[in-house]
Image 1 (cartoon, one colour):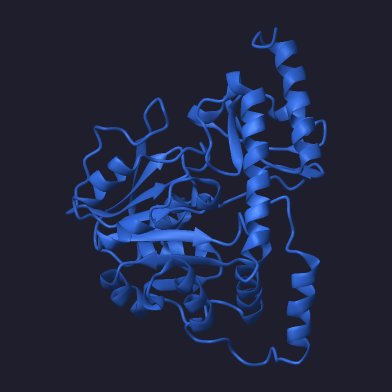
Image 2: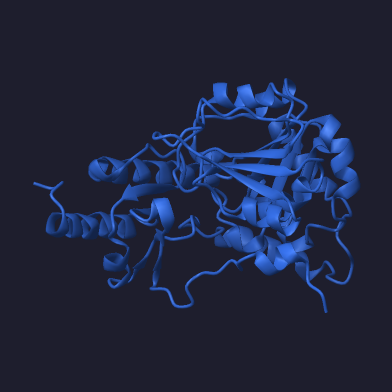
Length: 341
């Protein structure tokens, strides 16, 4: 057998096999789907079959999302999580390079390399913002990927810098997986730029990570081509039904989002000396080497390597979990550093 060189050279995505009981490492919601909604969906499937394929284009779910966002359903594509849409989007455009701004979500580069494309990593500036010096080259670049709020830093990218990149005509994937926790909605940009794709998800604010539901919203120009490449039957009937029911109960989502934002801001206030940039997501980046300290005390957070090895990312959990994190990090810093007096 002969394997493609780019596959041989890739590193597999891995996570620790054994993790402590408190999981604040994957940016998941601390809230499950309400039991009443689960029961309603379970009852629906008591009398509806699993042996038939789902809608080929998930029109019902797309139409509901379109109604909420005031977008044509033909501009929306749903799939098994935002991750499943990223490689489809990367495959749409001609060019040698996929550009990412580091640090950011590692799967952009993962999927680009899987297609044999060169990944050009541009370092964010000292404020974790897109550097002013970055100038896209539409002839060489297949796609520029921007995550806002950015993972793992949590900050929003300035709209003026996003516009500057869009103005060059290069295709832009704007990943807004955490947008519900932010005050910045970039959907209006779709009215101005045909080279824009916005990625959203039900994993974070909706608490549905395990059901794998993501969607992309784009211009009609890109949608016409996206439709040709989009995988049929890309959303299973159970996940689609659950998403529809959750969209009917937005007040529940808004309540949970408000809680997470309050808890996030309290954590940032208490640990302000460790916060390098204000988060607009459901997690906080902290400049501390408390990963092992927390791990040994039953709390998993996200650690990093390379230029980010001095940081950890803490997902906002329950009130009790958040209080424990604040207490433990306070203990660690007062013992090992001097920021607490």
